[in-house]
Length: 532
Image 1 (cartoon, rainbow, N blue to C red):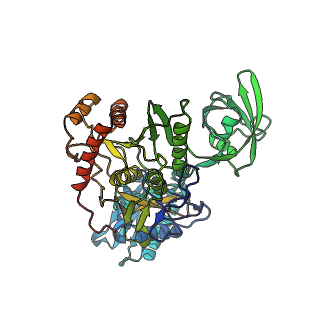
Image 2: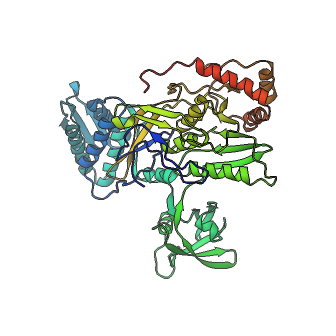
Image 3: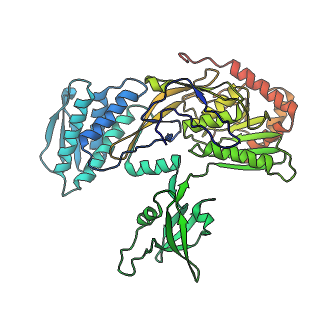
């Protein structure tokens, strides 16, 4: 997949709209935009591998990207100095002292003689990268008997960037190479057979099989014991080396479409199977039917979310034995902490027949984006209620804001989390990644919700009795909610909000009363300053 900034991936499922989502700004060429609480990237490729990376290359890349991309101009001296101070606090045997005036820093490793390094005077990234690299190389050379040099470098990379990004905002951060690989798997999927393993004395037991994965198709079960991979016994019998769980997973991975032979023990039976490796995208969508209402749950936004959601709609719409499609729908975003920006846009576009989805504004030219929905609505105009709570964040808030502001959906629940900024994911030459906040989100009606959240039309905070909520609504339209009046509660009781939504969707007059509250709420919202 080609790397892009703020890219809305063209959707491919038959229920999805055939055209790309319209966007009104040039696409970037080297970065991936994300909008999750944990800031997961969209379609990043060309990720750096470890290889022979010098400290100067690492810092030049990291500091350069922060300087270029961050939402606001940065003070490079502050970032690097605070990173050094942080290193002295978290790395064993390392002491760091900033000299008066901040013109130099003194480091000591264990009981060795300290050394003082002059710090640059100006803001130039190259000069600060050189200074950080010189300090890193010196420190690594001082401590080979305490810690291997490569390990010391990695510790310093992490400490200096953790200290630097802590100065920016709560969401900008550095992800070390191992964590970056895991996060890429969560957002983009991975090539493998679709199993989760645990190590035992006899082999590697399968503890989970992904639905529809190559392992599931091949007939592997939870509880099966993998005893050989690619003809090599995992326990090292026959003169081989015993495999670690990491080594087994590495052998199960490989080029997409290639086969891997496995020997599996199932009780007293031994099986040999050849499984084709395929791309596995972790499931994020579940769906169920509640009488005439279709309920769609989205746990987060990864590379397969929009396609999976479209498939779920088709299943509920066409798969019922009576042949009757749901007359109303619930989109449950409670607990959804975010994910890919392009998938959030694509999900909103599924339900919207047209109009704006969101705008983003920032300092970098490519951070200024505008997204419009394309014609069509997979629900054919059927009523839609969105559920949100205090864990509904970022990309989920993009969907929430777009559907509510456009009048396409009514929101029920509590005020959302309030993460109204987007991170771009910058690959680093060591295989790690930088998550850098680079734009603010503006909903179609001009709302900026960072640190504020989006208050619902029908607030259920503090109420566990669905009948009480509905009785108040029947008496008169509930007043528009605010964050103060509707706190951002987490872990809402599942049945309460769902019951309210299902009752609204089967009671048109009651739904209309709640919609009136939603219109009042939007009319009272101040427009964002400097919104495009």
